[in-house]
Image (cartoon, rainbow, N blue to C red):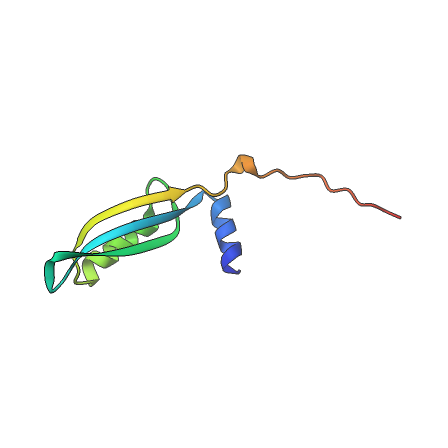
Length: 91
């Protein structure tokens, strides 16, 4: 399945494009904040993929998290999809 097909399938099953702006402290200079942008398809409002990523970050990376700001956009909703009856033209 291509990335486009995967994204379309996620949109049909309730996932939406989710973007997180993650501010974290640089390990050697705790007073300096750095930004990391994470983006994937996730389920609003629980965001299981984002929380899995943040858990991984907290337990495996040295830069402590400071702030996480989340935005999501529902790209496709069920009422935006209409199945049309196809008609064939026979000559």
